[in-house]
Length: 318
Image (cartoon, rainbow, N blue to C red; front, side, top):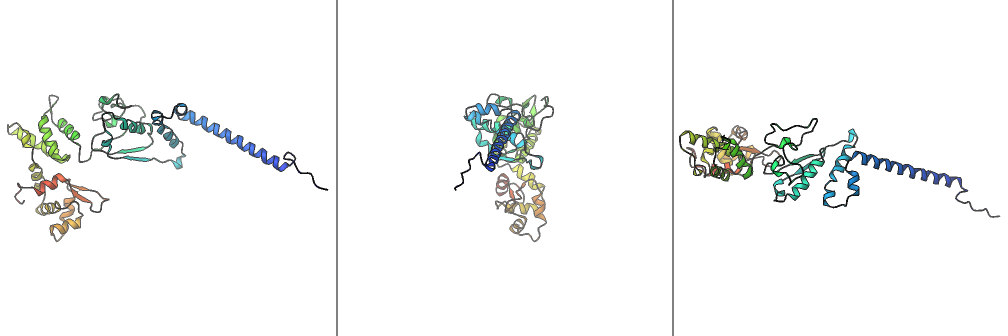
């Protein structure tokens, strides 16, 4: 006699399995609901973003959700992401649309370390940009302001960025530096036409700007009024002052490496035909030598100094 087939409800094993799957699904749904509720409560913009049309305006706020997600990581898994934005001056235009998106990205992710490189000063602390970007002025970016006197500092606020100026300044920054360096009765002492002449010949080298200011003051001390022609040259005063601080061996070494795009200490010594390397490390420590420790040839002269050394017609040992 054949056995009757078991029904689903008649098999205790199947019933238990179905009950377990149902329980698991309910627990999972409750956990998802709890996670969603926590997300809505923790990330203040989540609910609005879920309801918004996913256009450019809405999507530009999504970094806030990523920043909140990063902040929820356990302490042992916590990290600080680093984002590098180089040649930032390429974002500039008269509408600032791309810069507006990048600034919103930076502002909405305070737990991310942004490194912004460019030839010009980051102008976000300038009140004149009000209306062009979301957050402007020294109150929003106190560490980017050229002067923070009288700027209220939010209690418990974290740093909103620091600015470190390195060589090869843009023409705009050269002009701003010269205008602020010497001031009389609240006005720049160096006239606009002289500032333009110095900027054009400096190639953005801060040392060139400093020496030009020194020459400007020296001319005034003689009783003569400086004119643009005094600075419209390869700036022999830069070369004369630089060489006067060097020993004869260092001067010879400097003239030798001016023939090279880049060098290390051994190459510099051999190019100069010296029998010992003592002068090369001393020269490398001078501020006129730039160093990139990650390059194959780590040392190089700024192009303005190379040009001045190669075209020197004023030094006794030229």
